[in-house]
Image (cartoon, rainbow, N blue to C red; front, side, top):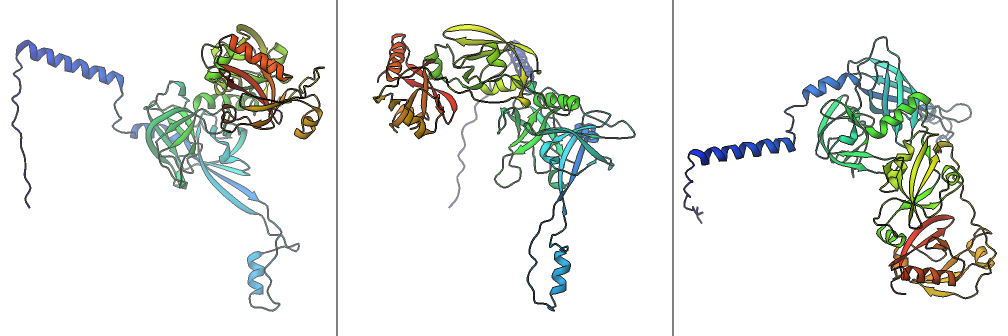
Length: 492
């Protein structure tokens, strides 16, 4: 079988002469200049940047003493030729305890000042007895721990050197854009100083912590890179390489670096105090969903909905359960994660202005922040009004509800002062079940007012419908933990 090549007639190019040709060339030049302004060209090489910052990047080796344990020595017959072997191998002392052994771990870090301050991850040096810093020149120095912050996995170390050390500055991670080039340096898999490059794949990633603000990158990050710097093209540290997402333990192009916006604040506190001192507002909060916003009368679903106000700064300032925090210290609050970060980054003792939405109106509160590390998160008991409970149950909003009784308090192991409507049963195909309500939950408020009886809830539903609202906001407690849930009241 032979192949056949099919050709098509060539199309004659148009004739471009005089002004038409000049106009086309000018348009092409202008388009090229505009495209160049929108995107930076890929660097021809990272060699100059690597050479510039390498003296400030360090390898970290930690040594930890692991206590020996008492264990049984293998049983061998007396006089056996293996008796001496097992005695020497196991080396038990007279009490049968094996001697302690040393465990080593590897990581990375970077120098941030000429006098020897070094940043790394907390998990790199956690519980270490001895920390050795190796510089690019081959010099090694012993390091001491100045302070650590497990919440952001950041640690600050210090070495004493006879001469000033090369160091690198922090950059502003808030100006980093998705698609920007970045370069990672560190000690991957114990292979020594190593460089990898890629782009910022995403911003604002959260893994597990309250203060998480990770840059995601496809620059190769492996075990041993932990604590190393992620550089922008100006040689500034915009992130501290901390974690990878991987099914096999190696890099698959999904790495995470804690943003410099978080790290710089932590480092300043560790340098000054040896510990973190984060602001504390003293509220429990949850995100505002669209149906909650509709039930509250908010124009947009944003802010932090206050579910509880234990004893603390917010309570002293007059914050109430059901308030929606819309701004903190002049900064717009979009969600709970953003608020937690804003509060944590604010100085302890500072008086801040909060704008809250309450009962359809905006109010301003002045709060003097406490310190989160020493705060007590006690949950106040629900006050017990002198109102008799109704005996009947009622099916409402996809649930079978009953007023509180002494028997139900005992059955559900609730506090003596607990009041509200108990969810005795729930339709597993209904909206309430879909939004997480379960039998045994306690509904304490509806429409941001206490409910003590079936009649109270019916009245709140009627009020919401009369106001033209499609949803009703319920405050639900489960094992003492409060949260708000918005349920549809368009039809019962």
